Image 1 (spheres, rainbow, N blue to C red):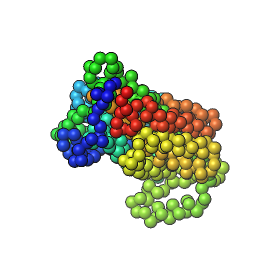
Image 2: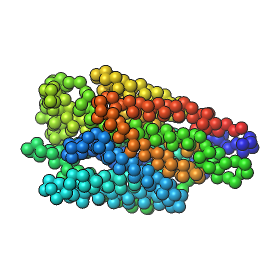
Image 3: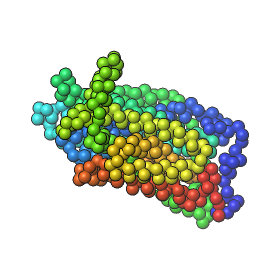
Length: 481
């Protein structure tokens, strides 16, 4: 590429440009807020999924590897629909694609009502546990199909809603809403998946549909709002001239190593994330050192004084087979929310770091730190290892959006198509958690962390080598040859 083809960069941008002002002077802050609500939605849905595995292990007698079919069904929806979603995003524009995605999510949420009826028939022997499990997996996959449309469109859209210098910052801010949803998902899941009646019997199989029915109602309202809202179709910068017909230059997105490696990095990142999130309850109930009895007394005292929070605070601990005090399934499900608080804090602080430091450097540094955190969990160092599980949530926080921003950098109108492949890479979350579950079944849950450790190593490699892949010093400019 010759110097005459060099793109104008943000270094020459007018001083009037801010984070939410486009090149033509439009203020798109409201649009950004509206699109960010989608991140809240799929964060909540993912938070529910992440505490569902242990429910099916207990209700249906599944192993850890078998229960990972929940993640498989979830991420299979992403894999199957990512390319069609990218194609529809081009045909329908951002607004049309978002509305289609919301309608599919609503359909998936409503499916959980008949799925729960099927599950109730297991008690009478009319339906096998396997069929009931498949019914729930169908709902999980259908919701994921709708979320695929939303992620394929919303992630790249946030990068063009304002000054391009802040693309990585904007997508991380929007993904912070995702973190908020992830906090509340496990809390709601602990109430409806692990509830008990007065006799102490589980009622989770009867109430599992309630949060999903609420999701269906909420997204239908959101679809109406998007229908009447102003959602401009803004074109991304074409740094690599992939939209041109320049002779002698390859215009395939696959000819750009920074995009190809982003697809691989996203595969391994989501694989690590899905594994850690889905087996969090298993780790907390099996690998945490014995709990001091004083903690149980303190929780009981707090529950007695908590009023409306009494039901939530009760039942966090139970006596293990060895007689020691341990964290219960319900307590671990609620602790998952603490993990997602760490995740959210990481998103907000990461967005600030990305305004000051190059995105690829922050990604590489966080990747290295997560390798170290997983290694410490693997080594079973007591409470230090427990703390490192929560630190892993923190260091994962900026990975998905930052890989996304780095991967679609400079691809112009083809960023929509490129984003569909990066979303498709989410299928890593369907495959490697089963490997993590297998390792945990053979050894223990701490040893299972060897799987995400290697995944984070690849993410670190991508971040630290991104300038070589992209021929760019940062997200701001491209070095031309």
